[in-house]
Length: 194
Image 1 (cartoon, rainbow, N blue to C red):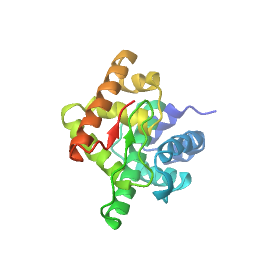
Image 2: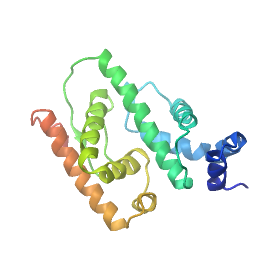
Image 3: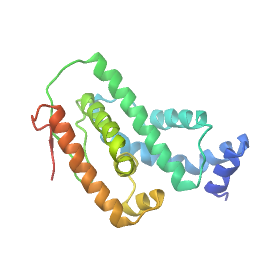
Image 4: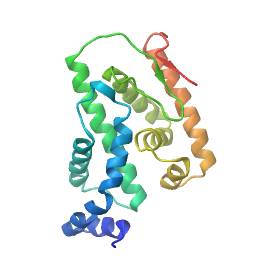
């Protein structure tokens, strides 16, 4: 069986056939990541697991500038791309459906975006973009843990830091996002933290 990291490096080196051999090796894991991302979407979402994997795959193929390091890097980037796909879809739904009451969103170890309100996902994305300006590693932790479904240990490996740092960054990122989203919604308490 071929090694995912070796195939990524061959693909980075220009071997198009490496991508064809890579996809069967990573497809089920990409579906797992997609299911994790979609779990936060609910009834308002029209995208299915296969569609999300396919869209992320298309974006991966188009990203020729990526300097693949290993299997973990591949899945981390895949999770990030899936986040972008879902946010783009939520924005489309939000533009079609203006307004609506805000609902509570819980930020705990597995934060949940309210499934009936795509504006919640858009607001989270905007807050993450603001956080990225001051603490990009915290955003990476949120992307890997929340969207990628990675464990503390896997996240630490991707980022090249200790698990203690990941735990601290995860905790402070959740608090920062809670505050940012609450302020954005005029202190209406759009979020709660367990």
